[in-house]
Image (cartoon, rainbow, N blue to C red; front, side):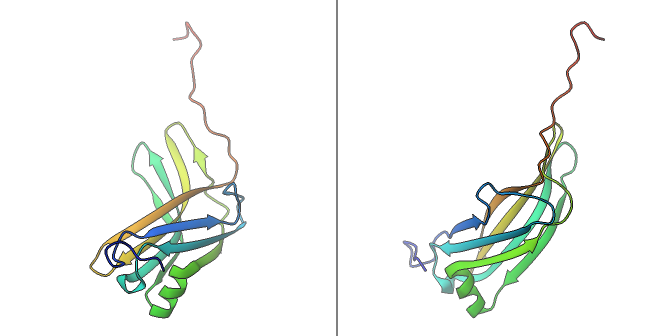
Length: 145
């Protein structure tokens, strides 16, 4: 594991790799993710969490739903995760990624590293589920009421 400039207690660098270069998946596809955590010594890491979630952005309240979650605290499992962890999950039939005018639905993979002492760092990477075209704002013809 790469050590930071302060004896390994630096800011983690989290690299995430998707199994599909375009990060575009269909409902029911198997999402496979590999990750590596560097920039911090293993003894400075108290836990690693991985998740796959979707959330909304836009007007009104924002929603969040976690599809897959794992928290790793066992020392041997932490070492394996930091050196090159990964997971896979079958994507559900919905919701699909949506680029609406008022509301957007986004899917993401998050890897969160908790350091001894209470600091945590999150790396979030979006991906698409489905292939809905982006919504367009309605326009009214000139002269229309």
